[in-house]
Amino acid sequence: MKITVVGGGNVGLVSACCLADHGHQVALVEKDHVRLSALKRGRPPFYEPGLEDMLGKVLSDKTLVVTNELANTLPKSGITFVCVGTPSMRDGSQNLSQLSRAAKEIGGCLSAVKDFHIVVVRSSVLPGTAEGIVRRSLEKASGKVAGVDFGLAMQPEFLREGSAIYDSLNPERVIIGEFDKRSGDALEALYQAFYNGKAPIIRLPTSSAELVKYASNAFLATKISFINEIANLCEDISRADVAKIAECMGLDSRIGPKYLNAGLGFGGSCLRKDASALLDYSNRKGRPLNLVKEVLRVNDGRIRHLLKMLRHQLGNLRGKRIAILGLSFKPGTDDIREAPAIKLIRELLKLKAVIVAYDPAAISSARAELGDSIKYAGSASECIEKADCCVVATEWPEFKRLKPEDFLARMKRPIVIDGRRVYDHEQEAFSRKLRYVAIGLNL
Ligand code: UDX
Image (cartoon, rainbow, N blue to C red; front, top):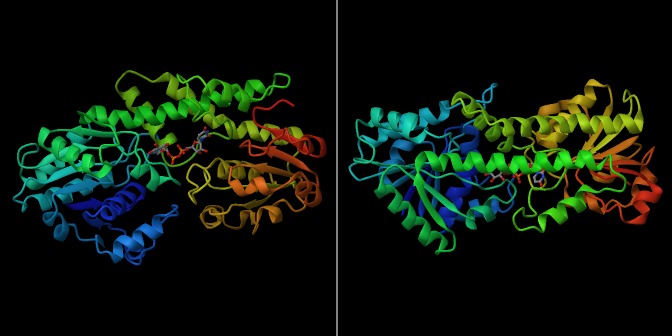
């Protein structure tokens, strides 16, 4: 099948590569010149395990072409997936300018297309967007009628950064929001063949499909904030450990074990953005989601909580050398958007602490954000050298290789604050030789 994908961000690039790898003929349209030239050279503009190899393969197989010319590619394809960004505005509402520009341009191309072309919104958008602003722009620019002259659908994407290819190839569900039955049938056939019947396909009205994405991300955020509040409580209960509480809770299949890791809270480009957008939407609807509001408030409190732990260990933080292990918002990515580590560092700099940080992938993204205001180490062991305290802010597996002896030998004071529960405090040496303090743990 010939497919156009508009937008070379996480969702667009990963989907385009996976579809092309499956043998579809895919054109990826990217307007940003820097991104475009990187993509043409086989370089993904962000780090994602396995993506560079896959991109190289589909480019050399010529099942994927990367271009900035929509007008040349769209008419040759049967489906266009719209994967442009929908960033947050200051008030939490969505900025739909990229989406409306894309819809207008797609509409312009549709006017010359004779066949029934299907436009699928894959960007995260609030209920009513596909059938509202997108449909209006497409119809106005094309002079055609949605559902009659061209098809319209929306399909939310649930992939996680760091496991985007795996998630894209092994989804737990494929949600198709259809404006017209013909588009729903075509997408169902595409995904039945793609997943060989292994992924459940659910067809819904477009606004329900749109809401599924927001409700899912807000719920994941809720689980995280919930366990973080339990973690706070554990810190005040003799010998309590939130990791054990979460493990026991998770054995109940009604609860499940995932998204119950207490820590510095959720970061990344999606959970906060989507929960805020949903909250803003619910307020505008006059049905405020108070629970989601509280989930965000609890998450915002995680950095303050860690600062309190630091002050408790070190007193005044001015001039104290603090080693931060991990800068990305989670392991397996170089993405620092909404990363708790970056927020923590900004607060520590205000308090005049001296920061040395290390991350296996995100140093250059952090440098672009923080410049020379902090020092960057070349390894985890170099990072903790002469530090007054070490904070684990992201649970990269390689941090586990640091043993109590390493902290003892290298640090000025062997104080470790484990913000992600990386270390096993039941290893006697951890609690005996070091001052080991961890989120949700009362030793
Ligand atoms: C999320 C959704 O999982 C995905 O379905 C959606 O498509 C995009 O948003 P992502 O932002 O890549 O994916 O990251 P995710 O793995 O969900 O983690 C988000 C944040 O929550 C990270 O900062 C992570 O450290 C934190 N987290 C996650 C916890 O603090 N505790 C947990 O138990 C799980």
